[in-house]
Amino acid sequence: MSAKAAVLKRPHISKKEEEEKTERKRRRPIGVATGALLIERTEAAKVLGNCSISTLIRLETAGKLTPHKLTGSPLGKTFYEHTEVVALSKGGDDAR
Image (tube, rainbow, N blue to C red; front, side, top):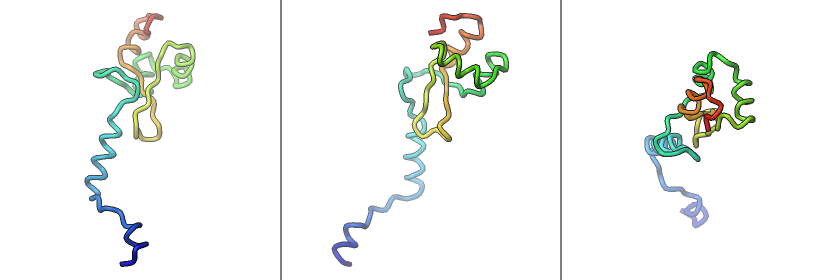
């Protein structure tokens, strides 16, 4: 084996180990309090009375909902804290 080939050779990682590493990253929240229950946009829309995704985005812009992205979430999904969504559904403007 040449010296160049030895430099390019990577340590072998099994497919299972790679999938486990990806799954751990996927579960790691960014900027969320530990133990916070997160729900997807579609579920939040249902909780708020079948509102549209555009309405949720307007609520984000108004500062009434805080969007959260999870590392490695498929297609860059957005999640919200369940407590914020429920507070808004009960008519509370002071969800934050």
